[in-house]
Structures are given as structure tokens and as C-alpha cells.
Length: 55
Image (cartoon, rainbow, N blue to C red; front, top):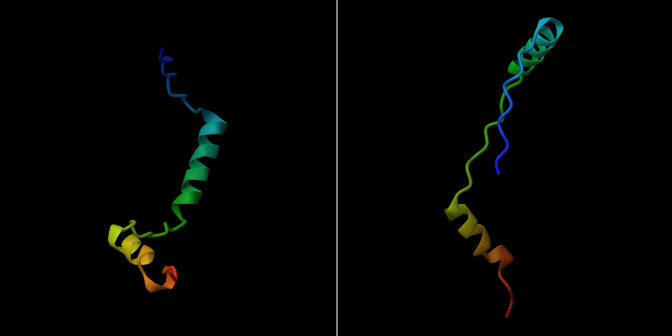
């Protein structure tokens, strides 16, 4: 049986200011751009000569 969802807490006074400062501080950090995984790159890696087994 599922549990009921709790209501969203409301921050007031000091807690709200601390949260806002923390959010603003993190907004200044740039995000890292990562490339999405590619099936073709995975195939190239698996079937490349670098990892070929010697039979």
C-alpha cells in the first residue's frame, strides 16, 4: 500500500534566507557539459583492435 505524500515544507525567516543564499551561491558555478552515450562509440570501443583477443 502506498504512503501518502507529505506536504511541501514552507521555509520562513532564517531558514528561507539560508536556502536562498545556498541557491544563489550554486547558480554561479558553471555546469559541466557531458556528451550523451552513443551506441556507435560503444561498438567501436568493444570491437576495436586494442581489445581484440589473440586466438
